[in-house]
Image (cartoon, rainbow, N blue to C red):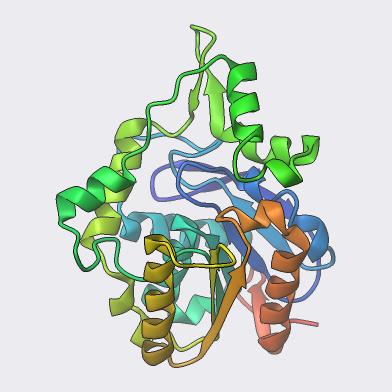
Length: 293
């Protein structure tokens, strides 16, 4: 379905159900189809997966792509669906967005599930802003589709590769008139989002997020690399800052764990929904709220 954002048309998929609504937010340069393998584990719950502005099948304005606008997009889309409160689940950049929604609109968020994202500052100790920006700048991929598919299939998700996984991951690319596959998110929009991440520290929001907040850090079994250490430090800071922390480390998980272990991610989302599963959640067209079951 099409849903309104802040001056843009957003594309979403909605699965009907009863009980606590679930909003799924993909990561940077991804699409709503990223959650394809997780959704079967959420059958029975009302679920909405949203293509954020510039991504997937949503409109691609020149801007803005700042976090406040992306938050307003999500809230406007929920308003259009009549959903007053939801469990907001985000992966990577989507996790940062989920945390920001909980900070800016606490009355709309029952719980946050942040999967391998939102774990600290994009500019960390030892980094300059320029170094961090360079680290977060994507490659300008332009490959024949079959070559791209083979490259992605041989990457970190190779042991779990399947046609279903390909259908969830490859839609982040589109084929141009020249026959080459490129990311569907324009490079300029990608960098606007990177700049917003560099200019905003999620840790300033954490002390003000009062709902149950699940933070998941993924990494190798022996997490001694610099990125794993950064995420560990982010978890330790979150434990001190969050009023209601739920902190998890999944050793052996790759960054795109919803594609690697979708049943585990679905189980976590169900646990988060079960914890907050009482009281009103969905507003009728008349503005009155209906009770969740």
